[in-house]
Length: 208
Ligand SMILES: Nc1ncnc2c1ncn2[C@@H]1O[C@H](COP(=O)(O)OP(=O)(O)O)[C@@H](O)[C@H]1O
Ligand SMILES: [Mg+2]
Image (cartoon, rainbow, N blue to C red; front, side, top):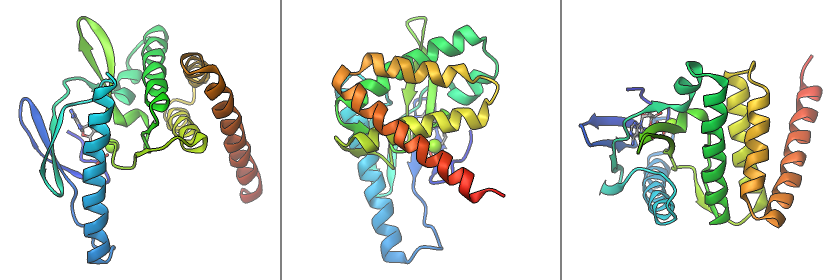
């Protein structure tokens, strides 16, 4: 199993993993402890809130202030999944992702690090289901900007890994807007366009 950037998966049993946030030496000790405790608590809270809204996430319990015991999801990270699947399959799983991200946002849950490596594709009742993990940077938020940033980050991570599949992120965005309440979709799309324009401006003015 991949060891992520932020935390260590320190045990991997058949049914669960232990995710412990380890000390970052470059941070002052007190601040480091505060950040690790906060992210651990937040991740557990957001996983539970998602579960209560029937968004596919693993079960979780708090082992200690730096460690979560998380249900092991048997499957493939979305980035690995996409690499070896047909375009039709990719579009179909992105449609499911769009549906559940819209559910999150409608319930004011912001993921905070929505990338293709923080989604695990599992088979449930013969159907492929995207499970969302790694909520340590997430928040309860009703702000359009925070929600639009989730979509922006997801598309950025998708484009960076799969530049040849241009129409897929477009499809994701369209589906997401369809699954949201129409007024909210309109506001978030506007916000997203501003974020994208900001990105283009920065790129143009910092390159060369
Ligand atoms: N509940 C889980 N079930 C199966 N694999 C997991 C689970 N949680 C994490 N992983 C695997 O470990 C990797 C790192 O975990 P993650 O929670 O994303 O931590 P990090 O903050 O280090 O990125 C994931 O990309 C995934 O491959
Ligand atoms: Mg991760």
